[in-house]
Length: 244
Image 1 (cartoon, rainbow, N blue to C red):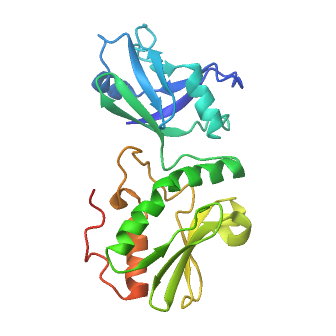
Image 2: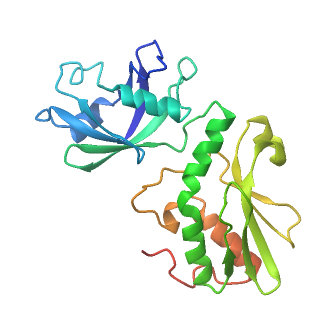
Image 3: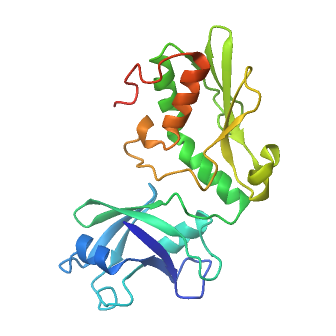
């Protein structure tokens, strides 16, 4: 379900006064009035117990999950404070019973350059493993430097032909990415006239499920596999590297 970040108007640095506003139909469908609280996991970080045994949560107007840790997490992710009238949207997924997990939604706007970079790096934690599985199953060699994505480039090769994958920062990218201070993923080859920019934050990233990520769950997976298939003249769908 899609939820909206909420604040009581104070935007305390401590995180107090922050929460998540739930749509009435989602509250009635996913939550039970028999529960006194829910367990909320914050994007693979802390788990917190949030009280829902209160009239305001079950009213027609409020419907907020409120906890200081939600505020701390929003601020740590550069999602708060936000411009007036523009609270970020997030994804809240039920996991089991009264347990839920909170993730960034692909349309969440980030207002600091560092915030965009950190969110991009966090999203890429599973990318090398999935890319390596995809490539090796199709006869491509992959070299992933230990410091990637901070340092170096992933090199994909077949014979004498190679491609490099690295991080594109706003100043090295130019154009729209420079204007809006976007970070992205860049793929470029020796036979390409121009580098291709992938995953331009925040428009083309989707929420990942940290416990089970496969190539198909990376929203640019189909695009980059098509690029690699065309560049190296291989059948992009010839192997089942995406399966667990």
